[in-house]
Image 1 (cartoon, one colour):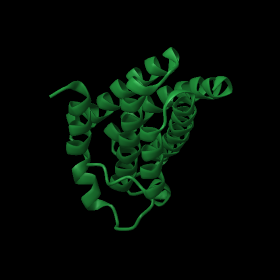
Image 2 (cartoon, helix red, strand yellow):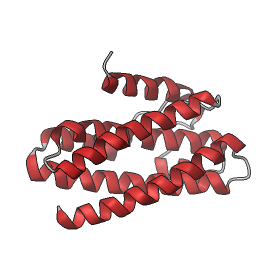
Image 3 (cartoon, helix red, strand yellow):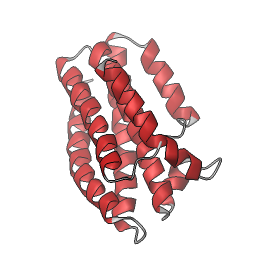
Image 4 (tube, helix red, strand yellow):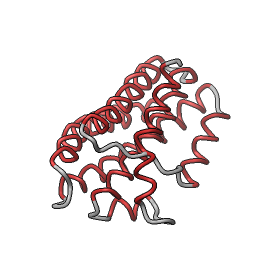
Length: 173
């Protein structure tokens, strides 16, 4: 199994438990506004799966070298978060992506060259902004476990760095 497949498999295995506990029909925003630790964790995993999938595309399709490097690091980071959740017994499977994220993935798969780079930066920036909101909610929730909060603290700092990079990258796209 190659690293790309392994990452998706780990994400899927880690996220499977989450989907079962999320309310049917809940959007990512509704889950993020929840204080239920499982809903918050599920939302984080769902967003991470989207960031990983788009990063995997970016490792091969991005035209700009800085975006390819970023995509490689992002993919590795998302795999690390899944592994950290599994290590502390908080692994959950990701629910299917919402329609808008599935559409973004299809657009990225179809795009090439500068168009791909522009769409990639847009998708990653939006995904990181949503992830920051979710991890902030995890940190603020009194129901979140200590391990969820620790992962959120570490992830939040990294997400802010990525947002700064992506905002700069967007100006060049």
